Image (cartoon, rainbow, N blue to C red):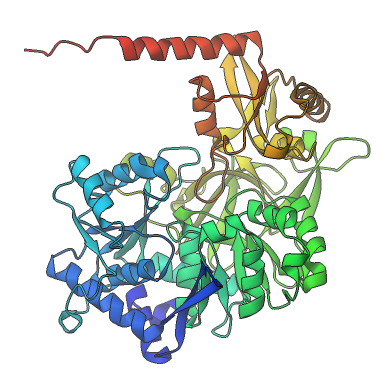
Length: 602
């Protein structure tokens, strides 16, 4: 199966529907009063429903226009998404505001930015969505519930004659470091990345895919919804809320349906280790699980080890662990671990990494365990490590910004020409003739063909001339005491120097413990492990540390909340200079809010 066989992803789904007919494309699991209930969506039914939606969109001349999809994870999302592709419209997946209230503002921003022409949703959510559209003055945006029966005329659907260059969808980034931007994913990008995923994971038409990730996120959409359509196989899916309430359901699903490929961010594997009990694993067999993708956030060596040990007795094999690296800007996958071997770990000198070099480890010196994100010499991408300031390619063993290019790299962000020139049009000094590269914003190092991701370029903290990786500090603190949960580490400038700020959640069961002693232990650990002062530690309630939809810590947002007085601590210690900075920032914001509006001009 090659990319060249199809002119668009819509053409691929049409072909698969002809080939597979009444065979299941998807099985959706929901939790009812009698346990898990399965809803089946065959290929032929998906095709018919997609033609129905597509004919409605075409009748309203929405071919080439952006269409917002607001659905919970389920069959109606898939029908609507494929319907957009069939119509030649540009799908815009987004979180349903009623599910996550904090996304109201974000989704409104997407509607404005993408210049959406219609919103597709469920009948039960349509009144709320229509009221929201009216309140936001989106009166020209029509809302269509797609689950109340036929909405168009299947017989009236016409092939939009798409090519690889046409836009398939806008993937709005989750905004871990910046305001969300719409990545323009073409049909050609999508076909190329699905082929790359299949090659890297060794997926075949006989593979069964499954997962729980939200459909509006790239890992869930590309990996769990569209990859099975590329393969012509079936996918077994459950909601994110079902997994988070009871992580064992993920493993039980894999066992019951013989799932071969599934994955999630690192925190999902941690959650399973912590919360899945032996009783919940009775009868579970994980031997079918051949590819356990771990990506979207830093991969922890401890997590890989703990997961393999915990679930090895239930048939899980260490070589199934598949650390990988990718992003929305590359459609999804860039690199993945070599199949057939356990994840590759690399012990490195911590001080050397701070200086930008992969060295050591040395006896008696602090070390850091890196996890390889896979090989960077594949046929689908070229990967380079480049000094972000000089734009000179770094030799192997030196840390720099990861630059990539390949057929899966999107053309840019929707209507962001200046940003696109900088991010998607970068040139390596002295190698300009090779063309443009994507600047990922991630730091990494190559050793041989192996890519090790070391952090985010914009989140690095510089203290006393040393580069401190926030993830390293968060990981060390989290391992200090079982009472500590998720954390966010960042730097702030106060009194002409950078200060480290550590915000860590305390698990609910430990909220009444001696937090003063725990804070002191955190400070002592950071001083010993990283040789930097830790004068700013805040212990907070569970849920305080913000994450993106994919589970990434939103350090930039946490920094902004902290400086604005928006972080309430159960216990904290702050350097006087940092405390003064926060108070002055809060006072300035209050003064601005209290100031009278300027008189109208003229």
